Image 1 (tube, rainbow, N blue to C red):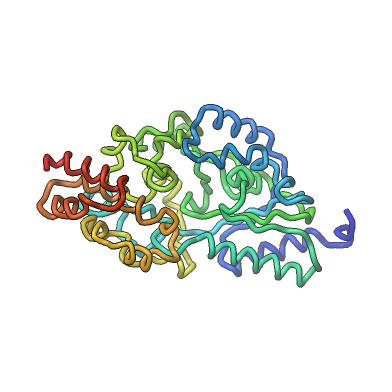
Image 2: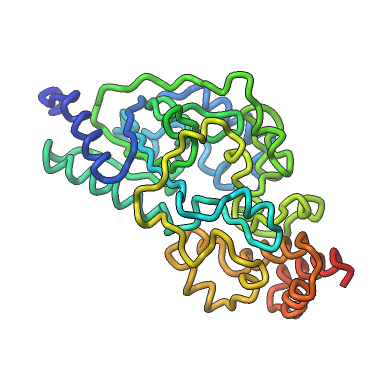
Length: 354
């Protein structure tokens, strides 16, 4: 093991755990690089076509389950959790019940978590290198092909629920996860065991029936996929089920009983920005490209761009109660420069008989 033989690996691991907590992470665990069962599950999921337009899932192939191919020399995956539940936001279920408001997945109400977590993980690695000397590592926060939930489970951070999200007994599922791939042969943690039991509340809660079986998600029907990853027209037959969800969907998490243990976000960057927790759809649809760029820069929402943002809101307006304000907002963009937006506006107006 080269120079690592002289390291006190248990002490190094404990130092990493303490350093992670100081940087705002609620948990750090260590897993080996072997996940053969998850590799088979991934191949089966891809073969079923459940990844939809996410061709990058297919393109990276086995690399997702073999981090040593992504970062040569990797022998361990350090997984971390960071809580994001916005405790000061408007009640999620109340917003969903008011179809004049736009519902945005709770994780995206604040600043972009990618940058927050990447910076914290980089600082953790740099502090460790100063203490023990240079070592190999790579920071990953949705930025590389890593089957992160499987490694997080094996690192003891939580189990993969029937809705395919990670759940922790002490934190529910309202948290982000990230990884450090490293060549440090640290002691591994015990994998988390599943505690969903006979509960299957998340399956019927899915508005579009995307959870086709326990642990099986057809992304092509998932509202998070449709409003974020899907670049073309949203299938008309699924549009009514989107309701007022304009960016992501939390329904399967909102009904999960383990989320009574969810921890409010401690990081200030995850506080609600621009009143996105409960804003009228008509106001959001009136934003110009420049207003979208100004307000969404620094947010995870910025990645989908103004066109998809407008497409999503047009669908939600089509699902909203008929009113002069709703019809006026839609008609104001009947001649939008985007053919994609125009088509969804026409659909929405037809829903109102306009």
